[in-house]
Length: 342
Image (spheres, rainbow, N blue to C red):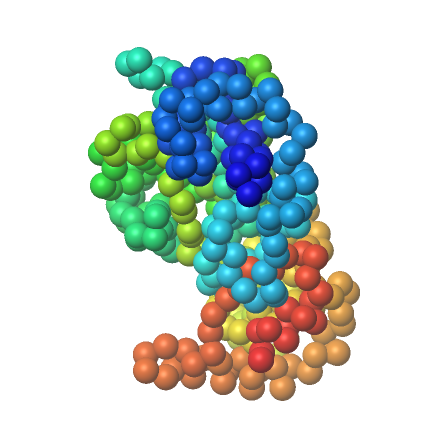
């Protein structure tokens, strides 16, 4: 069992261990995970990079499991084979770890700063509603250029939004998928990293992601925190808002710029059966998930309008059938629809 724990920690180190040095963020993680002293943990961190390069894929396949369609993935995923994901409606996710690296020196502490990149969804999202750090809902203060109460839209060249309660040692910044440049803090700090550079080409066009910046502090922040995000997902087509389909409004199935966020469960199901499309890196609409090329005539709108309207009936101040889910692109579309309407 101890060997398995050591291998698991080694796999985690593979994601963010720098060249052998005093890696402040890693030592308490190792000490806690292996129940050893700080001195022993320091030794493990120092030599760990020599023996971990082969273990991550095997451990991921053994220790990480998928959740059923319609479930919420609340634990951070660390696996190179994770399928792309689609968020429809409002859902909670921990995302998946794309990048982690330490740098800098503050006082006597080498590698005092940690940057992590979390993939949230592989498409443009409508917004980030809330963020939870260590199971506590957080409030943030924009460093510059942002708006109080918002989790995105801050100055991308700075730290972003400072998380209240951590004495300025923790910040988070979200990109919804419409960004046109890479995160400048990460590029500036790690763009020339000898092994794992984060370059200006890493824009993440059409992808929603979060960038965390943490500064190690023995009193405030000793290890990387755990995050969960409440996300308003993809923009979808609502035929009730399409004048050409018998509705009323500017929505058009073929024009993604007219689509809007919705948590109406039947609208979500309709989009999956018609096929959810997103813009690729070149800005061209492409099929992303669901049944591709389903003729509109195969889904009689009289029935669908009635079902969609029933979802919107307000009960106790809320629409009676609303919600959302995170869908892996490996999930069968009809299984996803069953989860939505069950």
